[in-house]
Image (cartoon, rainbow, N blue to C red):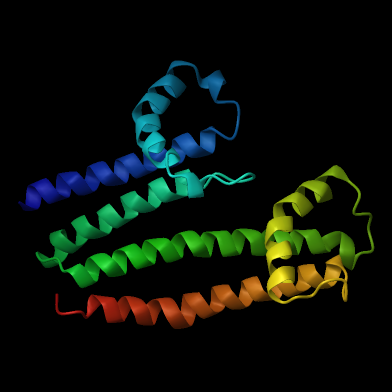
Length: 196
């Protein structure tokens, strides 16, 4: 049993690496890799296709299916590692693994939007022009989250885009810190301590 779990663990880690490689190389000119790219896509695209069928993961601007695919492997790795090191598994540990994986995805998005928002403040801080194509792309990325914050807090026209952006950045930071240091560790410990 120990040998089987070790082999499964190694296979999951290797597949996670291959999947990460496929996702990162897909951002560039992967066709230049020729046969290597074909082998990589043949090994990963059927798995990714299973997640691309989940509609809410595919937004207008972003496709979150690769993140969900990787998080599923992380949960499976947690499961195998729990069996490998403790020779037992519980529903509480499974729920804690799923919760941790979901938080990892949410945390990634919070940090992504936080960094993009902070980058967007550069021309605002230095009174630079915001009309360049880079800042338009950054605005396009930030617009959905800024619009959501504006709607939730009913800011309307009382304040401008800069204030909305700064409030969004502040809320993203607070949400990440609150989740990372206060909520998630406590919930994971609570779930892991479940007797079932």
